[in-house]
Length: 254
Image (cartoon, rainbow, N blue to C red):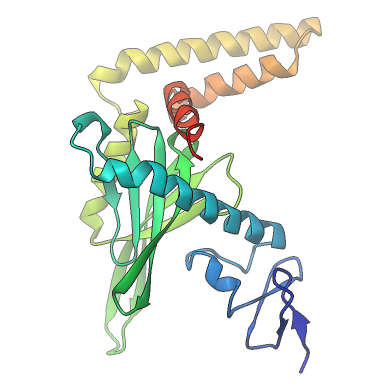
């Protein structure tokens, strides 16, 4: 039987105790795989993805303990956390006052005793998808069961940049979608008609300016970036405020 060495800790591992990665590397299931979130998919991941995810958990857990845990106890309404979803060992919390969102995995030493919270923390500004999904399977009795999920996806993120969280039922998702749409100002209501119209005008101006610059041969990277930002604002909402909040909060993490 072929033997391999764990690319992280160096331990010798056999076929059963090895987790193969997409780039041909192996990691041990006994120690290093357990450092990752259970929801992290190792099959398409490279060694760099895995080490990035480990670093992501270490930093995210630090952010969770320094920022989110105190806010769970706050009595200030504007600073309160919002648990948008989560059952069993996984939860998703949003901190509007800091522009951050946390995905938690609870781990236990025995059964439901000795709980330790681990977290991946993201900037709200980087959240680009929060989509509904369902999965129908047959249980041990041969009956069909449908489970409901919400997929979360983030840009500008190393490590785990997408994950899904199980919902208690399909009726939970519309409230999640509405919540994030309202945060980003992209819901289709009269209240946001003027905001959306302004973003569309800004995007049109940016595109016209870019076209003229291409003709004149004066376009540069900054103008290209500004044009894409203006176009993204139509679909994703204006994230400027959320970027500033998150960066300010993360700058305080020790």
